[in-house]
Amino acid sequence: MSIYVNNGALGAMEHTGTAASGLALSVPVAAGALLLKTESLLGIGATLMLLTALALAFLGGAALARWQPLRKRPALAMLRYGFLLAAAGWLLTLLMLFGGHDWPALLAGIALGGLGQGVAYRTAVGEGAFAVACRLATVVTIVAVLVAALLIQTYAAPGARGGCFALALLVDLALLGALMARVAERDGA
Image (cartoon, rainbow, N blue to C red):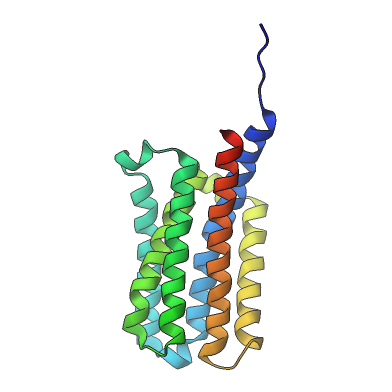
């Protein structure tokens, strides 16, 4: 009798968790920085309200991921759904900003994006939330995404149009996280 263990799939799942936690934490940080950068367009009151909504949605998503009925689902599926919800939220924010809507229209997209990122982050880190957040790879990912988003916002186009290009990067990163979760899910099956 021979037992075959697929170490590649186990390694892919560990790698996906580390990379996904970095992506899930870096995207809301970059979104917050973009909101701070567009403060002159939105106003200080609107910016603070949107930042608060982003933070509360992220924390709500992390709490939602701990909800007992959702914890019974496979972790990689929850990770994928969290990233897809975040991508939908950032895309909605992008469309509202690109359409020239005022800040209340941005609220729904930011709330969905933050909620999805919170679910993805909490699912990726599991129970050791603070141990993963302190890893060097997570910090490097946060800095890289933050710098990339701010550079895109600064040099792509003046005003709100640069923010749209930077939000498109956040949509792409959320979709990348969903794709990584799906690939790891398929490799594990």
